[in-house]
Image 1: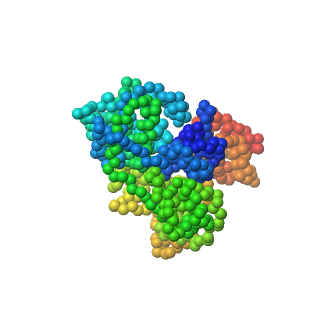
Image 2: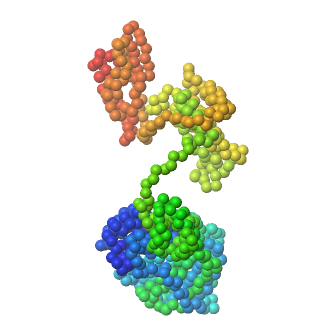
Image 3: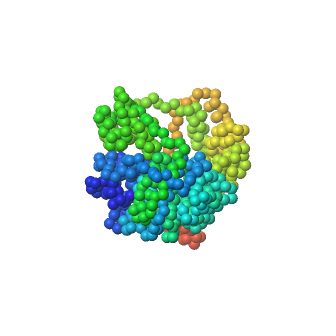
Length: 607
């Protein structure tokens, strides 16, 4: 989340330290900083809020609260400190919650507003967040969302239907075939899994809950009466709706993290007060539909447990100080601290959560470095150890291990969330994938520098309603070389001997493997043969060939040697490839001419 230093300063009386110090404080105690930007004389921190704190720290108040605890600077403005008053009760608006995915829905009716441009300070605040000013009412909802973390929305009451002088808002599941013309002027097809805000009197959807408002009740300069929404929607439901609609908003990003329903009242009071200040109007009343209030969570942790986990020797006063700085109400019962989580801290559920809070505020740099105790040697799992023995055996036979896709064109188990529509099943065997891998590698064996391609895979298959580990090999057919059937027979006898002994539990030593990147461009193969005196070393000739071939020669090897009438014939296979482009025959021919000239100069007869 982008955080403006100027905006942040409004939470404190004392001047904040330099921006880099703020960044360091956050980095070492709570969140990483992705960068610091300059914007019209302001410093903007890009704070990487972690998923476990999205419910309270995707807001200026949340970040200010963290800095207050870390730097021990008191807050002079805390929107969450006082329970907001939502009165009087609206007489011309009703709210009905029909969807269980809505935990709370507050509506406020304001009449006599003057929609127009926002004051400069508000435009400046939103610009620091990369937001475009729309009008004073919409800007107020966005400002309060960033300030407190509670998403808000404003509807033009004049565009809603009235029945007996009353507006009626409902929260329900969208109907099959229903659509929404959103504020971005796009029409979205809805499904029953999406929750909508509905003008109940007209039975028309006016917004996708937590995602986007609709054009049927959009705010314009002609708007004079508004209904403000401050609600709490289920995070997973909002996320799925945003994915279905292929749209992600600042509001949906916050609902997806999970918010306290208590925050809805805070956001409502703040936005109503701001709208009255910059757009005028009269509050006609509030409606608060809150079926089941949020319960207070209490978590207990003892001082010995805190010190044992952190490796520290904290005193009772140390822990009291940390909890007080964090604003975590607590009582001490014996050596145990019983903490009542603030409503916005949905992440504090177990003792370890409290220990983490105490440790990070005190500072992990205070934790002394201690060597880990010597542990008992690990005993390999029998199945894993057997797999390693099989790998060791096959690698020694010249095989290379590959991993092929677990998805297949046909099978017994259908994938619920398909990666693509081509292979919708989990495989029942490895052979088909391994055969395809063999075919690809045979075409590239000159580049790989191998005489016969031999592959194996140890992987999971789903067959007969069970998940099993399977072993399969694939061997290129070649004259005067062992066949796949011969290798299979040897593998079966090896596996059988392991199954009848406990040798698989012994230590395993595997060779160190080295990998290098490959080029996406095709390679060119050239052979060169020559007659040389019998005393000439083939390795020396190969070194000369490599030197003349240059960097484009990615592989060079002797593939044939025979003697005749006191002379020796050497034949080398060269593979050329570029990482930057497709090589041409002319380029490779020029290199081969250079190699031939060098060999001729040494008195060798090329053929």
